[in-house]
Image 1 (spheres, rainbow, N blue to C red):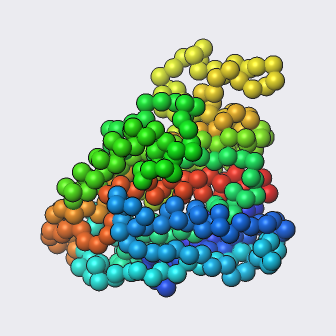
Image 2 (cartoon, helix red, strand yellow):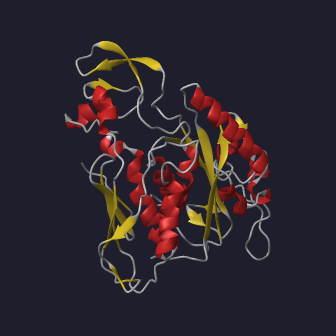
Length: 347
């Protein structure tokens, strides 16, 4: 299986399956002498871990990271940083009924067609548990650029949207509620809706908005390695992501150039920021903001028609512990992937 490494200069390689012994990774290209705040790295994992609230999967995992190499006396040595997070609460029996059955909208069918073999216990490498390694790598990347602020938050669940621009939000409120929405009135509505969806044995999608501030101009290259192209690839590599837009996004397609152009101030900043902080694939020093769309979790606790490996039609119902809405736990993943992209341009 190829495609387990992200980045060119600052590289993250991940390994492991959701029902294997451990999830882990290797960070290569990290400069030496960087003092790592291990509590900050663990904090990011705690934001992602299952079982943290009543509106996420109830799988109980400590998700404690153990560093194996590349760190000495609290500082990076410049050599590959190896780490693992043990899996301690697997219930592989919950997936026995899926051994020869393909779940609708999962990777089961495509894995069998590509590899001729699959780990049906939780999806193997296609499981969102793989994102543990991304969060660790992203937490290290954040510490390479402490002046850069990366704030992601849930901006919609189903048809419930924040109706304020990000400039009117207090990002310090994001972690004060289970949904991770900095608008507290909207957060309450979102949480109530997710609880309702869960009771119905169903799931719901949503969006996450991410804002990058204090980033210098000049990051990104103008042809294939545009900054927004790399951010798009990073976000679209996250499980369940169905869309990515930055700046004015699809709304910009409805506008005239006279409306959309960002006019300059004398210091090189712009009066508006419909470009989303990136022009010609290169950062211009303004805030970068983008939105990521997540589909509903495919495993639902309702009966659906599907097929087995022989093409026979049958009915199945989801089992196990799954998120009714993935976006609350995906917030730190979005931040981590953004940090990995930026670090790759900065180191």
